[in-house]
Image (tube, rainbow, N blue to C red; front, side):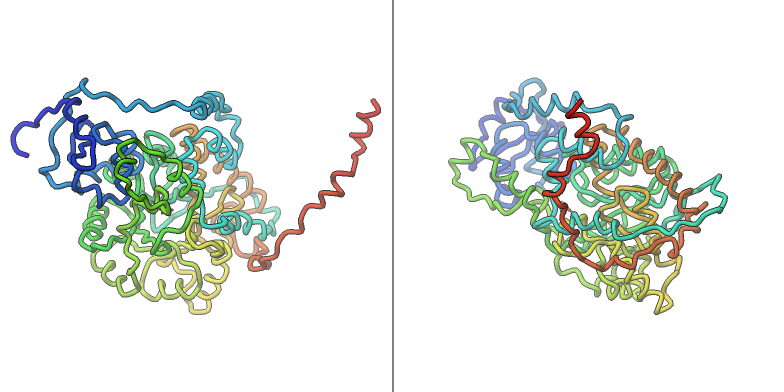
Length: 500
Ligand code: 173
């Protein structure tokens, strides 16, 4: 479309509300998406719900800002909406939503939040249902998701004493970049499902506290927005989903490098997205409008928000692609989602700069082992081959980390740093940027105290002998609680109270 932008009235747009002619408004622009309907990765049903209407609110959290302009040919960009002429989609406010908003208003002040688990409890109560389902969901029976945290319970400390811990310093260097703690904010998709500012909450808080953020491929905010929001000298990494169209991937990678990204984390554990049933159920409840029902479209109900938008990911990615990545960028390349020592050794031998031992927050293969368990075998295999320690090949771990003690266990066992995902997004979903800042402060407090208690003045002093991980690979179930015994047992205090 050449020349000045055409102004279109809301009334005109409203006429195009069918499968045969479907116009929608996104961010004040009108688009003809009729021909695109069958190609929409999320199905046509959801677009038809907004046929003839403003779809911005629904569109925003689950699309990068340029998704529509990048996918629709220019002649389908019809013009700008005449402001004031659009009838907004009036969403029915359910009792559930009213209750949720009330819970949001009454949530505890931030200074009552004492640990990372607290953010999760609050987020669960105050987040919109879809966002909570998407963030909290994990694969199948969510066994790996729970194991990720529980695996840390199999490691115990062997603290040292009399080490002069008047001053403790837990700052470190990650891929040659300074970090105020051995923790980075790992990539998580669709940040605006939790808060209108999405991943910007993370960028801003990370900048203030000298923490590194890994920008996700599928952020709700655009990549450039997140880079622009960084302070001078603030380090950011990037997570990469590899597109079937390598030209697109090349463009993304080279753009990232040009914009100063300091590490490329290629996700290798998601050739297909896992079944996250909590997320999938959300779609069943999307009853839709009269228009959709007329079309009789069969929606693929096997897809939640994530699967619907992930069809571009290349399941054909293989070791053969690694030299190509090395040829298109000078950024350090790290494989994210390595799950056994054999692949870690291959990554080191391929000349890569590191691996993230991860099962994708328990969202991919259920019964995948936890990163912390894999770490033990990876370090041992690398040592045997003289590949560890090696500042040019760093090992990271993510999944289930909720305490500085968890991080210290990973550091003792050989990790350079640990990725934390969900706790940060729960923090901002409930409290915005301040929530993330509080989350980082809590970790700082925990580091200070626990470094003292284990007798380690600096991160270099956190060594393998400080932990007993001898049970790490023992997957026994806990002995169940003796409920009958506890139910019948009356403590001295209770009997006193009853008599009193
Ligand atoms: O874990 C995820 O949900 C994830 O990585 C993803 C992948 C593709 C699209 C959206 C999210």
